[in-house]
Length: 246
Image 1: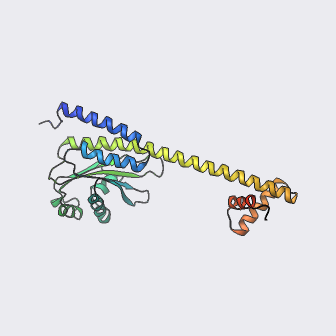
Image 2: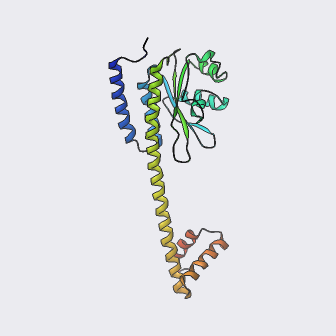
Image 3: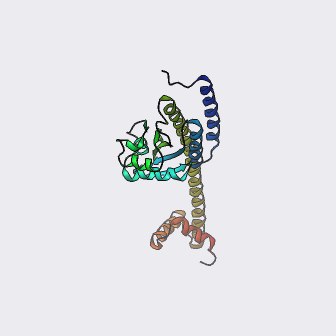
């Protein structure tokens, strides 16, 4: 028996993903991307009642930056504490592309997390990996979908939708991080240029006041910075701002 959704459902899914792509590209921050992905999963994946996103830092620490409800944070934290669970497994770069269970109450794979999730009313789970960021720090992660019903995510349909959604999210996430990195680099470059300008002004003041060369003025600034334990740029700024008093 085929598990493929009917043609009208496929068309509807294509429209949903097209709208999602537009909203993801419009997001201006990592938090915005993850929030939109989480809420889109509620519409795209049948049976979804609760959604979260797990990110794993390069040092191995996990956190949940986006949820559709506060219970998702608790469910994810149970897994982080236990050291196992679908989101922990899927967020591992060496782990599976996805992990799921149709009856967490009796799930042998996660003996601590499964019964605890069932006690909170969630019996099914589907977690799919986010593609690791190709640029350092290379965070990995997972999209986690929970349901109150047993076998809510059986078959290929829910899994394929979740994997497709996670791929969309990963691409948008990588693009947003690239923008944030570019903005950070521009800020750092501007700070460097500003520091260079103020150091040049401070050198000019010392050259005029003491009758020394540019090299001697810079060496005097550098040595004073070390002696006073003050950053060179800050010392130069103080000198240029208060040179009449000094």
